[in-house]
Length: 110
Image (cartoon, rainbow, N blue to C red; front, side, top):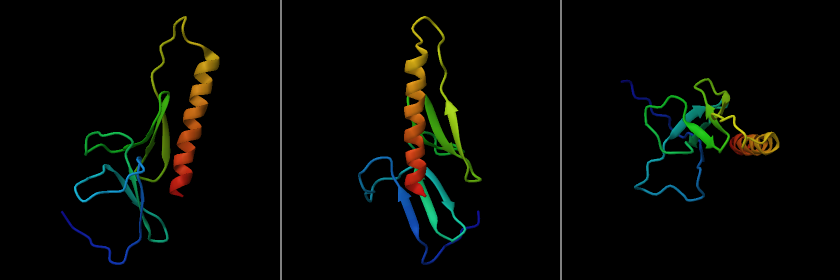
C-alpha cells in the first residue's frame, strides 16, 4: 500500500448530523478531490460496511442518493409494493420530496 500525504490541503466536510466530529468518532463516507486541489469528505447517511463502494449520502423513504468514484451522483429507487393501498398521488409526492432533499444535499457540498 502506497501512502500519500497532502500538506496544506483544504478539506471541506459535510456531515449528516449537525454535531461536530469528536476525537473518538470515525465517520464513514467518501472523500474526493476537485480540479482546484481541494478535498471534500461526505459522510454516509447510514452506518454500513466500511468496504462499501458507493456510500449512501441521502436515505429517504422512497429513494437514496449515492456518489460514484467518478464523482457522479446516482438516485436509487426503493422497492414498491403494488397493491390496493398504493396511491399514485401520495407516492409521487413522496418521491418528489426525496428528490428535493437529495438535491439540497448536492447543493450543500458544491
